[in-house]
Image 1 (cartoon, rainbow, N blue to C red):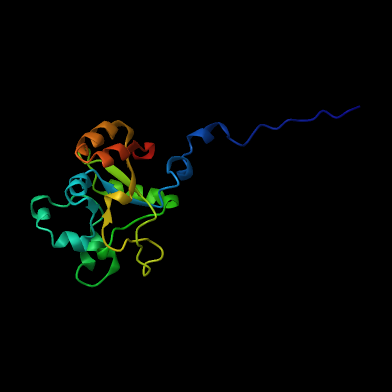
Image 2 (cartoon, rainbow, N blue to C red):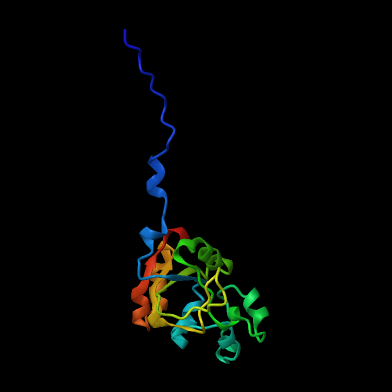
Length: 179
């Protein structure tokens, strides 16, 4: 007599796997770095044509009338004038650490100002003194920006804010984890 094979209940939940967002599926290969910021950065991107380092911002009179409302300010302001690399470049994350960039993007977002991730190519110089957290050597010009990620419901608003710099407006796309 053959023994009846007992079936045990499945313990692996495969059904929810489609909801897991992996950076490889949403961040294209032409993006090597990500800068987490918020929509307040758009005015400066348009005006300067670049993401500026804190050192460059500190000498710019434009910021007297356009107070900085984007980015993580603590370390970079403390490092100003101390010849520290963090204030001499733009803080970046690698794509596999995009959730760290999301954390920075959410820091100063408040409903009016919304989180933004900026995808950057590999044609920028990275400061070799900082290994664990990439920082650019100086500003990052807009030709090195390959994507601007915003929450799904704010794509049109972001495109309108960037409409006078058509290249940037074309780069705006949704990133559902920002929503």
